[in-house]
Length: 626
Image 1: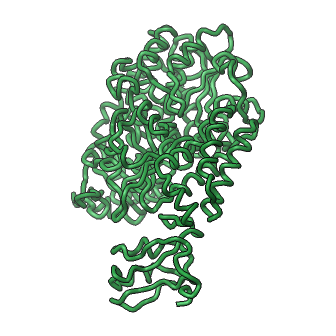
Image 2: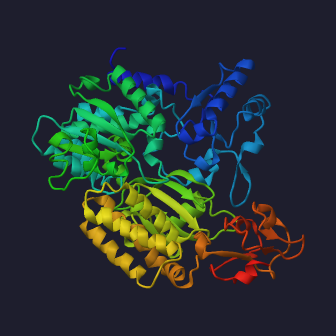
Image 3: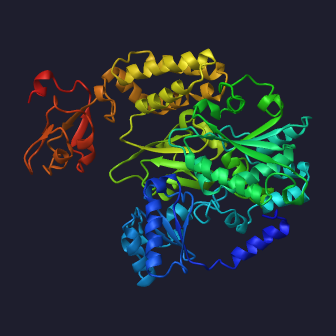
């Protein structure tokens, strides 16, 4: 194919503009929706359209992640914006017949508002979507991620053209630095400053790297961008490469993201074919080659120096700084590393200007941030919000509140490196500076809503178990210190805790944070410290009373029935798989303690609060035999 020029970009944009009224069925094609059967749904839709001779009028497009993960597989009818959820292959025939032949909405697959329970047809009327502000995710669900021309049609590569043809490296850096875009990978370093420092280092060979090694449990922000809009990452890297004078780059992606890797490879091949990568890009004289490096899934390789050692074929472990990677990075040469979301913001900044970006967000935390909203919220998925919005708005409005019968306990923010924020801070604005005051961090964007079913001590144990396991072992504070802390937490959750354990955990945490070599060890104690800070009573109950309030730590929990509240509805008995709950209908039930496996099923099933959780030694051995 002939290499594109600016005129070629404009011609593609004009071609697609003339097709803007075309009817398209935008079917969720991210990892989540594919796992839910969207490929089979696509086949069924296309077969039905062909059967009805409608395949020339309607086009089925497999998109990337739409974001509303809890309600997938999803489909949006464009240009009307009708939203359908939880589709199955059998729904395809019904959808075509009802919506496109009979002209009726397919009611059973419309979204139901979590508060009013009313059916909502328009995507833009759903709070999960209409309260967000898109930047990095601006193309999610509305393009085919494997079609470069659909990306170009929405101003794709026009920012790269502007940067390559109209701007000097210094002007690019000035614009990005003026936007106060902070690195979205967790550290929050000023992106433009990093680029400026690297640009000042003399050298003929420099590298531009993209960190797609997303390792936080429950995090899928970068994966979703790579799957839904791979070209925006490439475009961001082209602009950064021009700014620092790099002509070679790598996208480091964990191999556990096969769909992201495949779509990125295809995007790179397409960009090469269209002349948007390689030699003399857009006739500018600038050259850039990009390759993908699949990582083996080591969490520590999310740290920049460890990632670089991994690309070099060495063991992925951090090295001391200074010198910093902008001075000596990959193969000891000047290197800039930014994460996926950071690069995804760059084209919009170049096209719209630094002031436009700063108008979104707050003075010190500019722009938008992508979060993976998971846990006890009713509407979970991938969201993008402007900095400054409150935690309450995210949980209660975008997230739709908590599931029926549950009460909010805390928000775990920032993944294994983050911390837990209690209900008293729900009106806190989401900014880097406000969140860090709570002991948590914005991090890369993991956001887990916790309800009264969660034990905060066990949660701290879970995250510390993860970081202790993922430690590279290079420095003693992290390798040994996290293990000692983990052993203390295991003892506490298994009934062997003793007085002084809380103080020991706090002392160890301070030492590990101070002495660890890299960010993994320096932040590993955060979940422990914040749970002690805000939920110390739970630690004390575990140690002194041998009682897990939430009934999660099995050796510290007893489930029993409050006969005064029990209506004999039989819900708890039906939920119990081991027949430990006994009783007649409309009469108070009881739990045979020696049969109870403490699975919580009875507690979760009871709508009257009759199934209680007590200390492990609540009943004597004689009472067990009742």
